[in-house]
Length: 100
Image (spheres, rainbow, N blue to C red):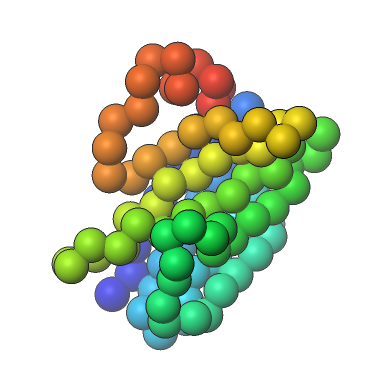
């Protein structure tokens, strides 16, 4: 089973691809930046991360449900964590503006 998550952060195209066989991969503007092939993930530890130029560091956290895997994405800027994407819940308008 393969699942893709696509979103933008500060003008950068982000693509996260999860596959049961090949693990999870993080692409920024089409370039692979990080990957993880572990079967189990801790919701409290970033599964993937990538530097996005001078903007900050993008961190991807897994959110497992009984049926599928979802993700939350945060942008780390000057040690402050900003919520920029969630595949399972709606972000506030302020959080949506921060991501753009």
